[in-house]
Image (cartoon, rainbow, N blue to C red):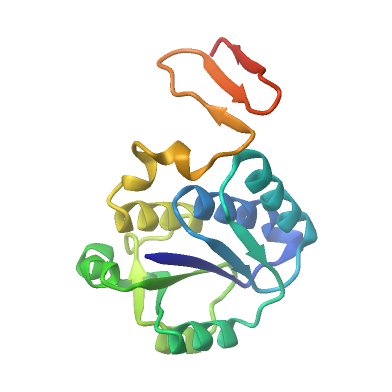
Length: 186
C-alpha cells in the first residue's frame, strides 16, 4: 500500500516544530511522502536531511494546493483519510482503509476547510477527544500497518548513514561509511 501524508494549514511562524514532527512520523511509520500546503524551506531541509542521513526514500513536496492534490489522488484510484476528532472511530473503518492500494492521510493544523469533510472517503477520529495531530498520525499509521513498520526489517527500509542498534541499556549508534560508532550511557 502506498501512503502519502498531506499537511494542511501549515503556518510557518507557528507550526514549524509540529509540521517537522508530522514529517518525521510519516517517514518512520511508512509514508512515502509528505505534501505541504504552503512553503517552509526550513521544514523541508530538516526532513530532507533526516532522509539523507537516516535513509529511506521519503520526500517532501511544498506549495501544493490541497484540493488539487485530493482530487488528483482520488482520480488516480487513491482513497483519502482525514484525521479529525469529529470522525468515525478508527477501529470501525480500519479494515476498509487497509483494502485501498493508495491512501492519502490529511492532517490539519488550523481550522480545516469544511469542504474536506465531504471530499474525504473517511473522516477518522483517533479518539473523539482533543489531542495532538502528531499522536493521531502515529497511532493511525501504526494501526494501519498492524505495527509491522516497527518490527524486523525496519532497518532494511532505512539503509542510511546512521543506524541505532536496539539495546536494553546504553546507546549504540553505527555511522555507515566511516566505520565509526558512537555509544555511551543512558
